[in-house]
Amino acid sequence: MIKPFKAGITGTGSVLPDKKLTNFQLESIVETSDEWIVKRTGIRERRIIDNGMPLSELAAEASKRAIADAGIAADDIELIVATTITPDYLTPSLACQVQKQIGAKKAAAFDMNAACTGFIYALQISKQFIENGTYKNILIVSAEALSRVTDFNDRKTCVLFGDGAGAVILSRVDDDTGIGPAIIGACGEDGAVLTVPCFFATQEDLSLRSEGKKQVIWMDGSEVFTFASRIMGESTKNVLEDAGLTINDIQYIIPHQANMRILQNAARRLDVPMEKIYTNLEYTGNISSASVPVCLDEAAKKGFLKKGDKLILVAFGGGLTYGAALLTWTK
Ligand code: UT7
Image 1 (cartoon, rainbow, N blue to C red):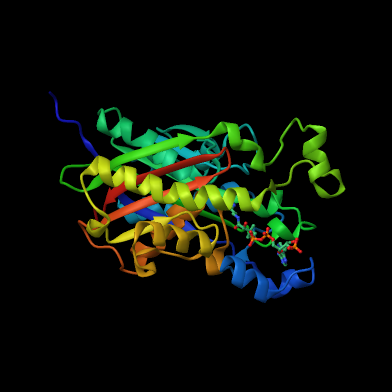
Image 2: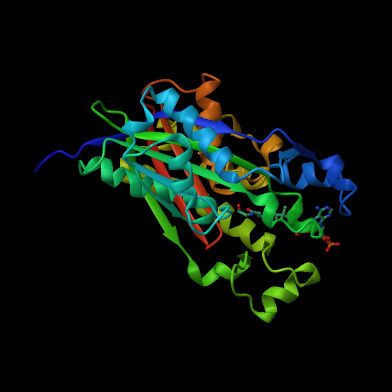
């Protein structure tokens, strides 16, 4: 049998918008308190994109940083996969806009939507192209402007979300590092617990939202909470089993950042100390598919990761979707 190539992460980059929205500022928008938000979610502030700024600019900047970090040229990129639920346009895709802004003229480009699990889906799909020898360098960029689909009359959701972008370069590597087993999955039958209508909305969709607004998030938070607390542990265990590893072999879990209590529940179920779970939601909030690559970039830049470290990347989100991957750090 021909040995497949391996796909590793050889560069990372991220950007958070400058503008902060603190819990204290939210106190003057909805009936809430810094105390409630911190206690129930762990979030203190989030970053919000300026009204006049396209999301593609944030995505392109994160991409440029990842390209520089990988030490390649934009011309070396053969595929751009962008993940987002808040693109500036349905067409051209965010990936095509990024291609233009970074000058990656030789790349194919498309968007994909698996909500907060988007980055893990992109990783699982993109690594196939490296493993089967089709491409050598792929840019994955996950960018979200959730403030644009946030209902600032709904205290149950508006305190949770933020904006940001994270990117990675996936390249062929010829050592034992790189992406190992990964799983992606979906429970479409439970999709109604987290929705953002686009061109169509049922009467029920509209009745759930303040002032009959259409393109805003509505969520049954406790249903998502229960799903998330269970699926993070399960997905992580499945990947470890596929890899023939135990949780003790893992240096860090880099999870989707939705709620500190979800992460604490997952840590308990996996029997790992919180020190092994990377968190940044205190100052980012939930930035959907961007959260895992932003965390990965931060962890790398802070010097937390060294070559050969084994990481679990794990996420869940609207759809409902879930996914996890084993990553052995390449750099
Ligand atoms: O990326 C994936 C998407 N999202 C998630 O993963 C979110 C998952 N869910 C959660 O994180 C939590 O369910 C929430 C943070 C959304 C809600 O926390 P909770 O502890 O489950 O609160 P709850 O919905 O059970 O509400 C408890 C109380 C309610 O008041 P009553 O009915 O008991 O009087 C809410 O109205 O807290 C109230 N409440 C608030 N109070 C102050 C809800 N939101 C707020 C708020 N400030 N922002």
